[in-house]
Image 1 (cartoon, one colour):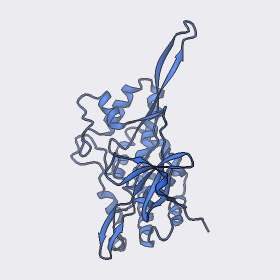
Image 2 (tube, one colour):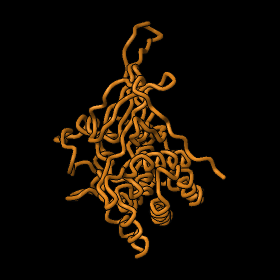
Image 3 (cartoon, helix red, strand yellow):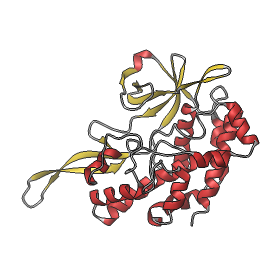
Length: 310
């Protein structure tokens, strides 16, 4: 029998500081000399009273799926603080290496891109992301590496139904290096960039549904319909609504196979059960059997669609 995922218990004396970015309750804390971000699972009303959403376990499962597929992602653990359920994400920045969010990248390299528009930013398209990265990294081998990694995040979103890949939910890590010219022995400063790991996957795997609704959709065989209705934070050109994450990859991967096919080829080599069995490792007091069944069916739908892309 597989071991359930552990749950980190956070005490008030571990508190570091409050995180302002985003819409949910969150704070930084210290654990064994490392800085982590606690994000509380939001609450929703149900016939039984107030219940937490599945944002905590969805975040954890998404990170574990990314690991199986060799997609760089933030390290995530289930966590609790003073009886409040949530997830904890390990900080992937350092004092030397800081995060440049996607909206900063886009605004820096595209004319008339407004980085302050968080919702309904229709200019946040795959084509514009590609254009900005190509301008930022003119060398083909460099922008290909960056775009392949960003494409892998879109494939992950398509697989898990993540609808929150807005332009602050991806980015680049940068640091300033000192280069010494061997001839003149003069020094100059140079910025070095790496793609930040994928992060913030809580809006996935049907995490917002109550079990009664999950059971209804499962019984009617409408999980695929549910998956198809999701709207993400990346737009198709001239789209008025965010594109469905799965439909986005289905339509764009054939146009840019060099970026998308490496991750799709990796997915083909991974049996579906390796992904769905991760849900069986969630503690039973964190997720219901119905929620697990629904999430597994979502994965089956995404997996089947993505494997058809050639």
